[in-house]
Length: 285
Image 1: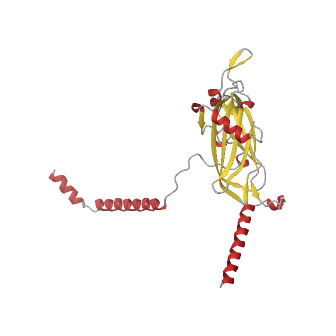
Image 2: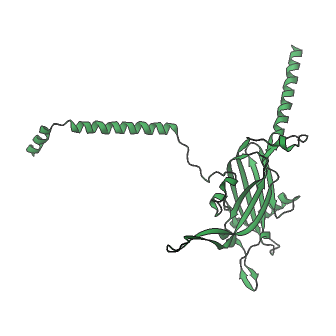
Image 3: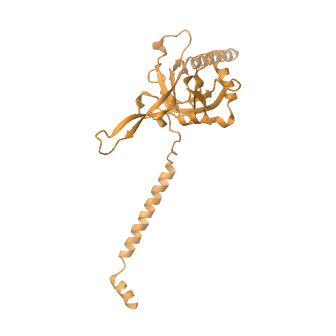
């Protein structure tokens, strides 16, 4: 009995070690995460006159959007000894329910006491992402009206203007999953070694009245949303419709059938009244 118990204990311990090693070897990662930023004018279709041969023309608006380009490589993280790309590639394997969190701090370098001006943020939930080791791209956008809203007035060629530059923006991007935790993280405008701590300090300095959560647009809501949709991972809509309730559907079908039967019975009852009865009621009147 003692030998059997000892054997079972060793077997369970070995199974536990193998299981943990397998889980560590199969952890999904989205690294490396690259973050780029630029201010760009958006393309917009402007309708022409009815008599014009060219019914529409492509024009550029004067306001500039903040364009955040996010690059990442979804894959499994295998053990260190197994670094072959062919073995790490997992065709046909997908990861659902991935969330990307984006935070942007707009700063004024001329204000040394408190450079942080505003905080913009958003979260993007994806339906599913393939773990294919390939370079993926995704874009989010800061509306120009928000940038103009918070930018301080600066002197440019002896004129007072509100103009932002690419170097005024500091960005943090995090991919995470409810089961696997943080999958990858990237920064823009900060030194790699201290990027996380430096960004947290900038967030702490932002005035509360200039915190705009949910203000960054996903691709689907931007002027670029209709372009190259098949090239990007599919995001979920901001609000999902309520799922269909089978019980409610069955109840609606039963109620509709009962109402139709009652209407048919009522119609049949009216047609059964004899014509003489109708004339007798008229004569009484």
